[in-house]
Image 1 (tube, rainbow, N blue to C red):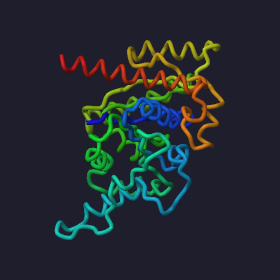
Image 2 (cartoon, rainbow, N blue to C red):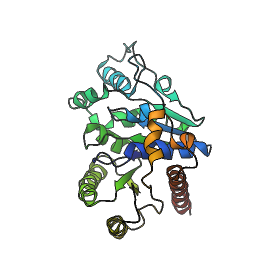
Image 3 (tube, one colour):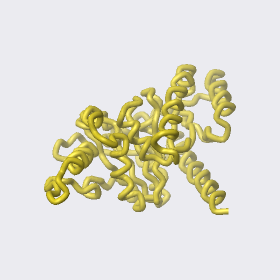
Image 4 (tube, rainbow, N blue to C red):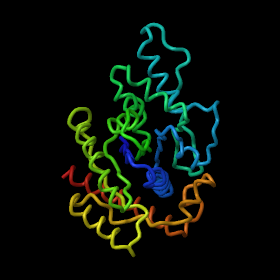
Length: 277
């Protein structure tokens, strides 16, 4: 079974989508099969991998709609318009990286989910059927703690939190951790903290160093050693529809995300080894 990792932070502008894309791409470049699920109605991950807006392309929203229809369909009368999950998944510019795309219609799913039974488990139902096909599945969550993010946390084995090194980021992580604990206690007891990744990190400033120190003290063993620097090439890559590895492999941003991917794999191997002994 592939490991499902939700990349989440309710605060926008912290490098969440950049992290989801580039960690996934770095693993794929190492010949590890990876699926990236775009669960954000802004569909930035979809666009950043070179997929322009296309109303004719099926997306995560259409799959949710199929699930809604299936739930209300008579058992002997299957829905003829049901979409195939595997047909919705798109190959990308990297051989071992696939995308489950989003579009702006996904914003409507958050509203439609409210009236559904087992509304928190819709994404889990979808991903459970294909998780064995990938080593890792990353879910790029919206920058909010809404039903789409809740679906991602219920579907996930762990949550990776990109965090900008500033005071307000420390304030925001408490809300996310509160949601994490609520999900773990009532909906998904397997959920763990994959790690906290420091983004837009500038080690020349005392504030960045202090925030990093405070986080490492408060979350021992959970803050990644690798950090993501401020890097113009990282900011440019999405406009070219490429992960940083394909846009500028020699950039500081590319090197940083390669290190994050290596650290993620090493941490998971260590956990697997511990569990089997």
